[in-house]
Amino acid sequence: MSEPSAVVTTRGAERISGGHLWIYRSDVRSFQAEPGDLVRVSDERGRLVGRAFWSDRSQIALRFLTRRDEAVDREFFAQRIRAAAAFRQRVVEDTDSYRLVYGEADLLPSLIVDRYGDLLVIQTLSQGTEKRKGEIVEILKEQFSPRGILERNDPKARLLEGMQQTVSVLHGEVPEEAFANMNGVRFRLDLRKGQKTGVFLDQRENYRAAAQYLRGEVLDCFSYHGGFALHAARQAQSVEAVDSSGEALALARANVDLNGTTNITFREANVFDVLKEYDQGGRRFDAVILDPPAFAKSRTALDAALRGYKEINLRALRLLRPGGVLVTCSCSYHVSEALFGEMLWEASVDVGQPLRVLERRGASRDHPMLLTVPETLYLKCMIMMRMGA
Ligand code: SAH
View 1 (cartoon, rainbow, N blue to C red):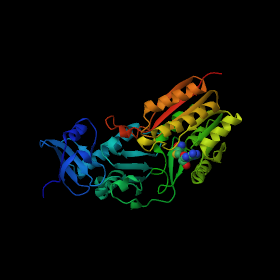
View 2: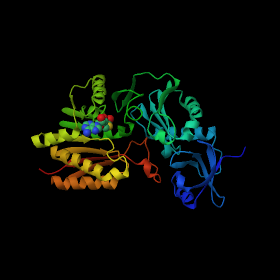
View 3: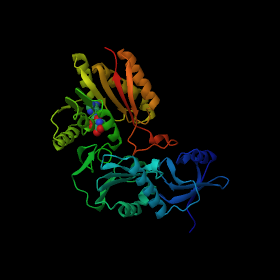
View 4: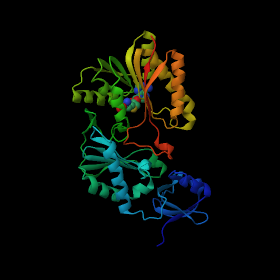
């Protein structure tokens, strides 16, 4: 049987030589492959472009694993996963939970593996990784001997691949209740239903960085399970955590009990309303944290998203006492670092007080970015101090 294959346009081939890992369907000239096959990709003159996963559904038709003429077999995947784990050994500290494999950034497109102690949670987000799921589980068992492996294959992206959304145990046992320890703070996890694969591992280093500056009275907006609030509570006098989801706050309360924290209060409300109320009522804080969900889910939603970000940032700045600290995040990929910075610039001009930039941050280092795949850069986190009297 001959190797499955695809021929791509010059533009497609140039995208790969330019460092991206994807070729869109519009740049595929012809193919001979089944869904999820590993294909040998060549340009129209027959030159090898590399080997990639083929998808017969997604607009992303090809996801590249290599540009070299090498076998992409079990050992290839085992090697990539070993390299991903070795990198985490160098950058991960003070946690038992982190991202072990981050898809494209580990040159393993559409594969996510998160580690929570002795449990692994995986996502196979394209036909290619889905087809090799059994093999990937075997490799993970060999290299990490986990107690259990769960597939959290419920992201909507799976539908674009013509695949079902599913959550199931692939190996061993995965308890209903699991725990994570990040920076000495304990979190209860619902691995089957929690956001992403359980918690926001990408904010782990930002929790720690922000905590250094959080004192006095702190307002944690969009608190979810209390990631920032619990870190702040260790130095702050008091923390108010706001989220519109009662379910999220129940999880946050459980974490408060788990850590024996006594200085966090909760409020189930819309952050936009709370900020307005406090602003108009003259309530002031020593620090405000803003970690909203992605306001811009698509490029067309960008303007409305920027207005939303500006509104909450402007109000948060008004709530700060002189010397107060704003920790502000955006996880919208479509809002670039530059746009986010401009929005903050405008908010600071409107509030009429200079802002000192304390730290410009992104996702934790276990969520590295691949320079030539801008889609891997999504999280921005700025820590700033309100100057002036
Ligand atoms: N800071 C959290 C993650 C926030 S996720 C952490 O580090 O764990 C975003 C949260 O915002 C979700 O819990 C969601 O329920 C909440 N949310 C979304 N829109 C909101 C709104 N308008 N007001 C209050 N909370 C909101």
